[in-house]
Length: 242
Length: 323
Image (cartoon, rainbow over all chains, first blue to last red; front, side, top):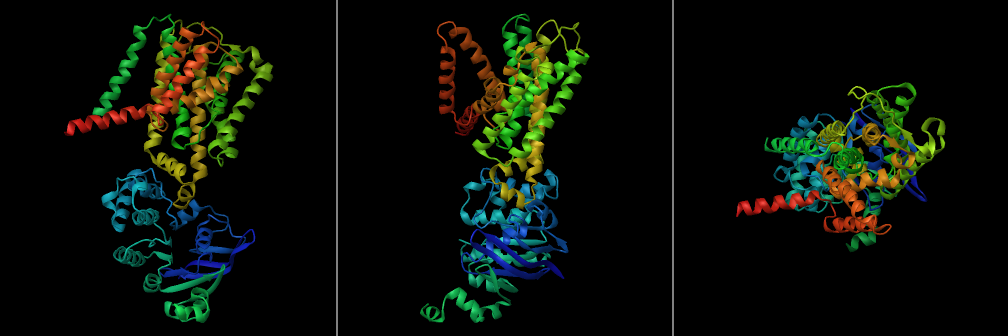
């Protein structure tokens, strides 16, 4: 069953074609990785999907609903939200309040609080619930960001580099969490630079390069695609040097 | 529980104060205006504190409230209590109209745009003589004293009405702060894009805050008109007399907290009066100068307001209690 359908989405910023006729679809319960060199358009794609950026052309359909012209809060209400690459927490608020605010999308304050505690449990941050979010370490903040997104009870969750700066043990925990979310029926799109992690956890990989979709396939297919190797690692001669 | 008892004790203490002051005297007047300005700063605090949008145009809504009830009383003999509701509705509407174009602005730009709006209202009130009496101002007519007519021989009832208004506005502020709207406003204040993405309708929440704040301050405009008995456009729509003063009260006391505007008002309003009393006869501008120096010193000493004095006191107490 198609959960997310993206048709010919384009977006230009001045002279830069950030997204160019990007087309793909994602089934319910899939974990899809989005990779590509820096500046390939991964974050722009996520921002466009949730409505922070309006596409110049193309359509995004979530669970059968066209998202054209909808604001991010409406998209969140329909079941799609994202985390922020650079971590965009409410720094002066407590960790709990950060997550609780997301819970207000579907609950009153009291229910949102217990929902938020549950989400903090899932990312292993319950112990710091009452700390000021801005005072946490970067990996912890990334996990708060994840808990906050979870607390909107998404059908589709877009994770923008939540594993950056994590140590291997923490990374395994997050991968575990991603799998358990999938088991709960959540559909996930994951932008990540850590290749081993993404190849390991994803069912399918999308490769973006200069705003274009270069490849769309299983980790194995993508890894052996000569175009991808060239875009990612440079020309074969350079690749050999590495 | 302890907190509620303490709160009740403070309210009772403040409620007893008017009984000690000479009912025809000068200090009960200062006291009444102090309570009124505390309530006004508290209404401002909903937008200025929780949403962190420093409005310098709240005089616009305040003046609308003062003029609405007074004009309705003068022209149609309508009780100021009903006039207050009408003024509140108009003030809320005006707040909505100004919020739609300005809410996207942040920081200085928001402050300047709201400042301009307050000035526009002042100019309109000065020019529209047939309705407002123009620069000559309006006098609230004297009607036989009764609660229903909002008319009293002495200032004591006015002091109690102002106190009740402060309690009500503070309660509204606290309900908003602790409730879903407070969480949403704090989220918007810190990161509007992230707030949207996790489902906060930032436009709607900002408009709601603006309308509640504008409506409350307009209703307080009626209270002011009834106490002051006479007012003109330059006082009720004034930048220095209203807009900046209420922002200053909240900032000096502590923005975004319920106690802040109350502390600020009980510092600033009496201080202004004392300064004027002591110094205005000595040299022109001396009282303003000293007042300014005192304010700057306070801000340098406590950049986040008087409220932080209590925070550090509490910290010291709990530390000494632990040792």
